[in-house]
Structure formats: structure tokens, C-alpha cells
Image (cartoon, rainbow, N blue to C red; front, side, top):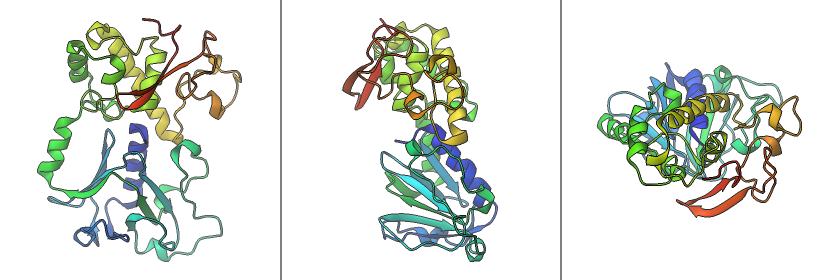
Length: 295
């Protein structure tokens, strides 16, 4: 599932590509039945909060998108491509799709885990975006959008202070690894950041929230801000420090990007202990180093 860095990156790109002008909107596979309500209207702005996107088309016309586990966008310049697959939503700039492009200039984004962000189309040149596989793609009223925001915890990428998260974690008897996945605690953190933040804090994932020192929670939140901002730049989530990688110079190799996430059975970069995995921990697999993150 794309995490908060990815949603904020899409918001930035879609703002640059479309905000402030009229856009065309269609629902090619028939599942987004309200496309006509947005078609040929001005898109005021695009907002990302946690794992949610809101496209503001005016009073009570907020297109809500939640990518879920399978959702993703593709984008490109030049003419609209042929409709393929379960295309839920298509948004485009009518003038820009008529502009010719050189061969190879129109490029779609790969799935985030396989894309290093290089060679991406300048967002101001993007003519169209397509959405497939989201958990939700529907129109919200302002009241419904506000209700969503009220349910979410602070978002590290929106400049939110961590006070509400500190209070919830400090009172909770749930493991910290469970709390970091709850969007009403901190919005935008997913399974990768959960595992990596806890490792970088040298904190056992099974420590109860109430037993985690406040200063350490603040440190984790601050660390999330930096890591997630970095993840907005090129879509990669890189959490390892150069000094801890086998290749200490240059860009992190794909297999060196994380300390523990999906590295179960492999030696910890720091201590050499095999990384552990617990399946189905609050619905997702949990990864940690039993030595570096001892209780």
C-alpha cells in the first residue's frame, strides 16, 4: 500500500499539472458514476492528508481518493492513451492532450516500489492521469471531508504537531507497532515506515504505548517527517544510513534501502542477527531485529 509520502507526492504533481484550470473528467469503467458532476469544472486544489487525497472542485464537490492496497496512478503527456484495464478515473487537460510529443516523451509511472523517480514527466507537462484499483473514488461533501479529517491523527508531512499522537500513545496498552499503523494516531505511516522507524529508534515493536518514553515518541515523529519528505522526492522509501550499508557510497541499492522491512531471515546490517518476521500482526507482516530492538 502506498504510504503518506506517495500520496503527498501525487498531490504536489496533480496541483502543478491541473490546479487553477478546467479539467476533463471521465469514469471509463462505469464504476465512478459522478464524473459528469466534475467534468469541465475548475480544479481549485489537491490536498493530501495521511493516505487520502481530496480534489477540491467547489462547494460540496470534493473528489476523495484512497488508493488502498492496489490503487495507483499513471500519467503522461500528449494524446490520451487507449482505455485499458479497469480504468476507474481519467482526468486530463483538453488543450495539452492535443499537443504532439516526441517518441518516448510520454511516460507512465511504474508501481512505486519499482520506480526510482528518474525520468518522470515534468508535472507542468502532464496532460493526463489515470487511476486504477482504488479502495475509494467518490465525491464528498465538505461536511463528509471534515468528518474524515477529524478522524485522522496528525500528518507529519502537513506540519502537524504530534501532541494528539503523544496523548493517545501515552495512554494506550497496545503495542507501539500496532499504534503506529492506526491512522487516528499518526496519519500516513504504513507498514514500511512502521518497521523502519521502530528499528531506527531501537525500540521493540511489542513495547506498550504507555511504556514508551514521550521523548522517544517525539523522536520517532520527527524522524518520520524527514524520512517521508525524502520519500516524496523519488518515490523510494530509503531508511538506511550510508555508513550502515555494504555499499557506503552512492545511491542505496534496492536491497540496501531498508533495515528490517522484508529482510526476514537476513542478517541485520548493524548486529548481524537474523531479522524476524511475524505474519498478520494487526493485519500486516511485522519485521524487526530481536537484538537491536530487544525489549
